[in-house]
Picture 1 (cartoon, rainbow, N blue to C red):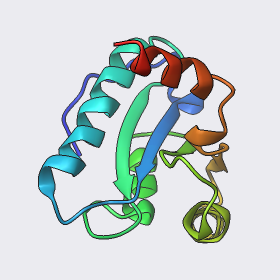
Picture 2: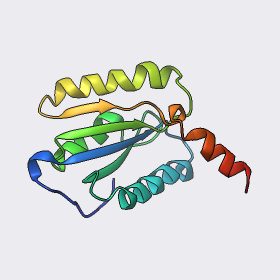
Picture 3: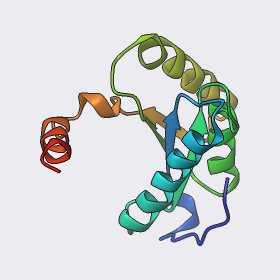
Picture 4: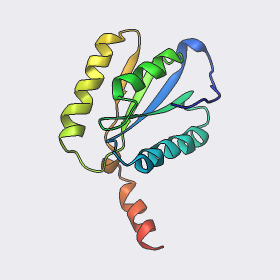
Length: 133
């Protein structure tokens, strides 16, 4: 988790994005995710007041800890974005179960999960752009 400047319209409607990755024993891999979250924080402007990262396993913070961090910073809405390419067991079962449990622990917050990144229709353009380099 990192220090950041909060942009908020009203404390009662603060919105957070939690970027969730698998996690790795290789710290540099986890740092890549954290760096992406920093870029997202800058790019999202007024869409999200808080941008944080969490990991399913192998690295802190955990998904429950990431959600708690967002709520402790004042978020009343937390959008969990699975940074995964395919809809494997983690995306289909594990992440939704952890988010559901967090919703029971934090009934004051609206916690939702988006489709995983790999499901985005923008993936074909992204891959085409990467291949053209």
